[in-house]
Length: 339
Image 1 (cartoon, rainbow, N blue to C red):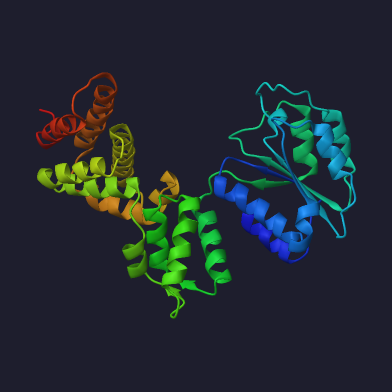
Image 2: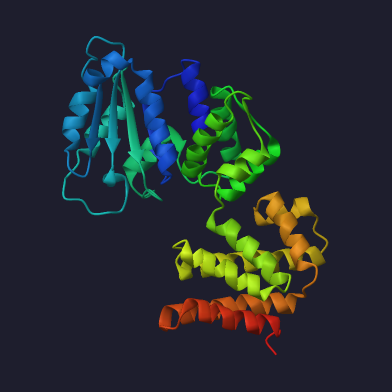
């Protein structure tokens, strides 16, 4: 289940006794908790919402709470943070997993239990993990695909009774590198800015939302591939002045040149823009820009640039030379075609 599905079901009054929210995305984890907390009337939350950190609290105390009747209300909510027993990590506490398994098979009907597993991966070999996933409602909190991000954005602006133009939505995703937490922060500003017209357009996004590292690096590459080395150096210097780490900049450059190389190879095999975006799982607009950029370059020159950036990364890690100087040397080699 996705976050958007949970919101729809809660609005329709379709409530489950136990939820497992699995994945490291901070925004989705927080949003799921908020949705379920909001399900409890505000004047009942002090007595009917319990939050436990299972790195420090025994599971027996949590189960006692879960089996208690709500205090002057219809439901109580029990939130289990850091359920380390679902991972391969060692813990200082011993957990009554048989007791938990018994509970999830026969939960208290007036209790909502949320198991917030903010981990990259659970230990699928464990019986408790297998049984949980068979029985409870699992909510996906991994970094969302772009299609899921679009649904969340649309749901957000609908709730604010605001519209967002399609090109503005595309630009918002590009500038934030599809970072959901940042997108929601930016949407808060954008909806306030749109007060009166109730419409978020491209100009508003360009004016209010700063470009992310990947977008800035893509712009840098476009300048570089147009042969403007002076501006390439200036743009690189601006990134350094903005406190971007040289290794992060270089990793983004490597990633972008890998994309350019893949686009070039697949273009020569007859792939269309749409098929490229699908095959490479990249934003269609980014694919469009990549297709425009690589037309004047052959595969060998792109390979040389990619290898040169991998070599630059090694130098950044192993020498004390100035990152800007190393980047300038890379540009000279790129300009000369590595002859």
